[in-house]
Image (tube, rainbow, N blue to C red):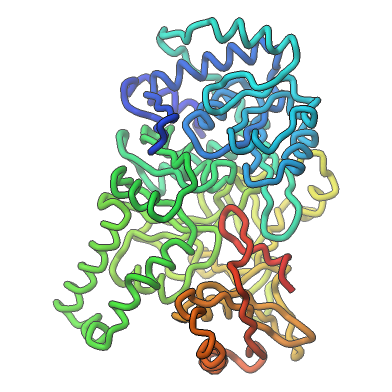
Length: 538
């Protein structure tokens, strides 16, 4: 296995003048060539040294996606420090609590987060630097003196002399994630985990130096951190950061201008595009009739595929989804038109990859096969082969920081990690997710009910923006946030919901029929990876 920094070493040597990191559509933004990236990493390492930081010391990052976030991240890793990754969406109180919990000595912070923090609440921080320009925001007297001396030292333009790449089993990252079921925990990952994730990406989704990608998922989340920043960057790709809140208009403009080779996202993005722009076309009676007819059907599907790829910039070779199950009808349509789709399976604790597959080998409804270096087993399967998915391998966390109880509960006696996901494996080792153990509902007849399966059917209805199925007094209730246009016509909304309920129940077995629908007035609260915070709804 090759260290991910060794790949970056190679890119700096081979493509010094090629853009590496670019802040998209921001007047205050920065950009770095690969040569400049190496020089600024070395320059920040000089600051760490003058501040008296040592290998293994914790340095936190909290801010919006930007080029300087990536520079700081790589500088910490190159110094053999420990990156503490904190989502900027956390409230100030939680950020302060996590800084204390992680024993961080230093903080790189974005302006949005800094506005919420109070200096007096950061007594343990020896130095706080801005992610905008690496200026000092607050710190000890000694830190100020070290920073001022460092700030007067010009960035060296000498040839970059390479990274330390022999520390595969060192702790490099503590990732704090809110998850969808409760309080955040500090997931401890090693360089081996990141390196294997990078190599899996390079093998599964080959990238050519000079290609481009738009980083839109939060960098503090492993999905965005590894799949949109680390793996493409060390492979020679130019990473464009949406340093402002990625509204649909900004995102589509960025995709059109950057023309990425890869889009990494959650199913919700493509499902909304499908529902609003594709479904009204492909569901027309005449289109459905010709869809699979030779020649004519081929032409129709080719047009749909071409228009979809144009939406994402026109040079798309891979469209990767993860984080949640994709709507079955959406997935079937994408595969019918041979859109370059693959759905992966992962979690923060695996940095993040567990399952994945090349687009031309991807099996519908699966989460791919176990990636190289990882094993998956089904524990205590029922009569349908469904049981808890348990994993082990190179990508695994080494534990939760300062939480031995949670660490002990997370692993079996023979060393397998309990994912908390219910699923099956087919004969070719394709992974099929059925739901979360904590969300599974045991029916009155002893049948296992997976709310995600019912929600998938509900979300495919034109009248439904999003849904959540919960159990109340032994009955299933569908909480529905309706399509906004439909919600404006309150006189027909109840009738629409009743008709929808009847339609859905005709598709469901008797033990999992929905008792009634409850309309909610606003979108469900979500985690940064767009998973609904189920624990908030009962």
